[in-house]
Amino acid sequence: MNVFKETLVPIALFFLLGIEAYSQTPAADSQPFAFKFQINQPLIYRFSLKTRTATENNIGGKTSLTGKTSVIRYDVRLTGYRKGNDGSTLVHFEPYNISEDMDIVGPNHLITQVCGLKIKSQQDGIITIDTENNVGMGQANQIKIRVFPS
Figure 1 (cartoon, helix red, strand yellow):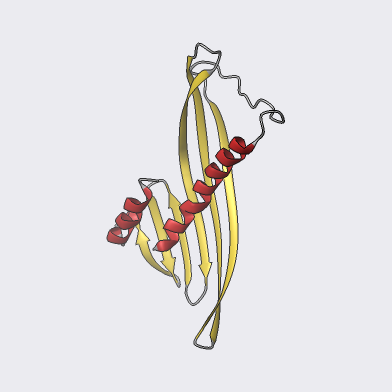
Figure 2 (figure 1 turned 90 degrees about the horizontal axis):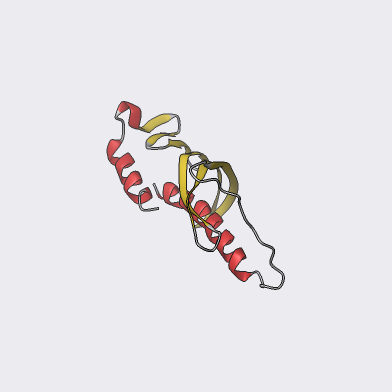
């Protein structure tokens, strides 16, 4: 179940890299990055992040290869709601429609789909979590509890 925790890392990294890149730009070399917001008229952006990793483990002289593919999709709605005195606009940031598909191949084959609060997971073709059909709700709730703060 640490797999779900690992999936939050790319999202957090994406935002932190954006903040870090902005903060490291020298003032003399920087160019203004601005949106033109109309009050109460949202701008919507769709993001998609696909990652693939391969890990080779050698334990006790035995080697195993694990591969993981993850696709995270989400939308962001930016809505200007008030003009500032300096000409800027205060903006409400709202991520939504968050979903993820994971495929992990190793000693076991794990396929997981997360869409909002719905989770469906199979291990070696056997459904272990399906929130729509009340299967594995204890595991699903533990996953949700770790994800909510993020």
